[in-house]
Amino acid sequence: MEDGFMYAILAMGFYITFTILDFPDLSVEGTVLTGGVVCAIMIEAGITPYLAMIAAFLAGCIAGSVTGILHVKLGIRPLLSGILVSTALITVNLVGAVVGNGGSFSGDGALSNVTISRSSPALFRVFPFTLLPETVGQVNLRQLVSFFVIALLVKLLLDAYLKTKSGLLLFATGDNAQFTTMLAKNPGTSKILGLALGNGLAALSGALIAQSRGNANQGMGLGMVVIGIASVIIGLSVFGKLRFMKPTTMVILGSVIYQACLGIASILGVPSAYNKLIMALLFTIALVLSGRLNRKKQEV
Amino acid sequence: MLELQNITKKFMKGTPDEATLFDNFCFSVEKGEFVSVVGSNGSGKTTMLNLICGTYRPDGGHIVFEGKDITAMPEHRRAAFIGRVFQDPKAGTCSNLTILENMALADNKNKPFGLGRAVNKKRLDVYRTLLERCDMGMENRLQTKVGALSGGQRQALALVIANMTELKLLILDEHTAALDPKSSERIMELTDRFVKDSGITAIMVTHNLRFAVEYGSRLVMMHQGKAILDKAGEEKKNASVDDLLTVFNSISIELGN
Image (cartoon, rainbow over all chains, first blue to last red; front, side, top):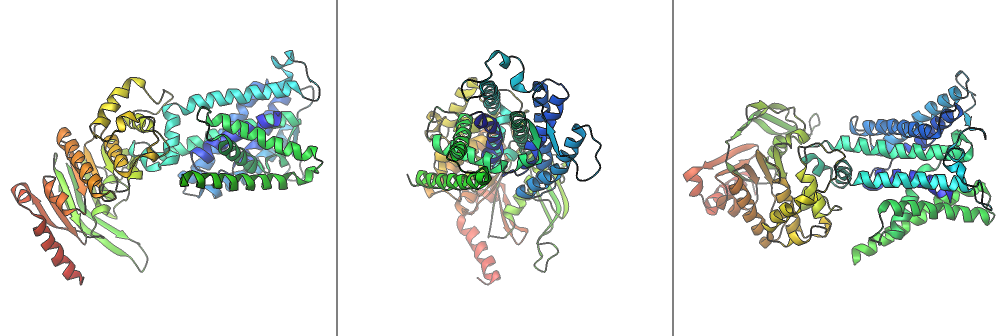
């Protein structure tokens, strides 16, 4: 469950870039880890996790803007812009990790892992979550509640934002960039803003993942695009018909369902090495199903 | 008010297929004119509109608007005073947004798109009144997604949206071409009313010779990047579809059709 909520923030990021802006953003593979590294370093330095998470979000925003600028100002295709940024971020994350460990960067063979020790002030080890019992049965209650609260907060803020003029302009840009142009607004600026937000959320998600796992390491970003987009698609196609439900809620539930599927696989005794294969398989199924649903909708 | 000065525009530049459409093309429009532009495919009508709106940059020459050189001004900045309705009804609105959201966005044109609420409930009546003028029943369907509207309704909405903020120039780019005869008649009447009511300067490209003759205060026929016919005032009033067809046919014969 807590996995579902921490990836839900990533999924909401993809809701902005993938669903609203129609931009398949691969830079997220890098920004998730960037968020994790930034957050881990700051928490290890004794900084309050709230501030660390905001910093992680902002770091993601910067990375996202770079993707946007590559695409909008330099005319590089969306997929390639994302690949360029995520590749560049490998170095950034590596250097960040080494510096965070107090080492000086020597070039290669460096330790690329920032650990958050059990005594450091991670989100679920600070007020107000310390008021809760640590675990209830098998469930890590503090983590579950704290991640749920963060996901809910992000959802409410995002809902509010999407109702503003700036938010509605994002929808317009994704739908019909010419329309934005006719409103005397540069659709490029709107795209960069959306990518910054999407990557900011991805980095925030990375910050939660790092806190949950107790470290931020180079493998963390792998498969994030698949997890994020699959959650969005599952959420929107399962709950899409419910009018009263906000898309952000659907996306959060999509993420919970997706993580539950992975959880069930591991309960059934599937070795964790098969995880990525299962992820890809689930994503394929989600894609095919949503394609079918869309076709049905068009026929009606 | 609008002047195209010595415009040169080439396509496929630097390739063996390079084609010069405009070579020293000059054209001007006076304030308050409603210009209908006709011409065969490839005569440069739409390219001219794209140059005026900033979708394309000319290879040479200047575009001057109210005494100001706007040749290098990007398209979205020109949109602050130039409105445009396209041939494709989908181009002027957002399908996934509701009528209300589309109008709310248009209502905020030329103002900053900040963190204020996008939809202002106090403006609903204004929107309804604007839609009532179209007489297409859209005023009661503000919450309907624009994607669910018919082509005619969408184009009417696009027209309303383009005219919601004060414009100096309205560009109509074959805006009735994709519609059935009845809808296109309707949209044309609506257009005429908008233009007359606001006294706005307008340029309309059309393939419908009857519209070109019946509406507007000036008639221009383009051919191979030149304005080969330009009638205004009394001359325009006396023009007939037959006259136009005669000129059209002579061009076609020239081309070997």
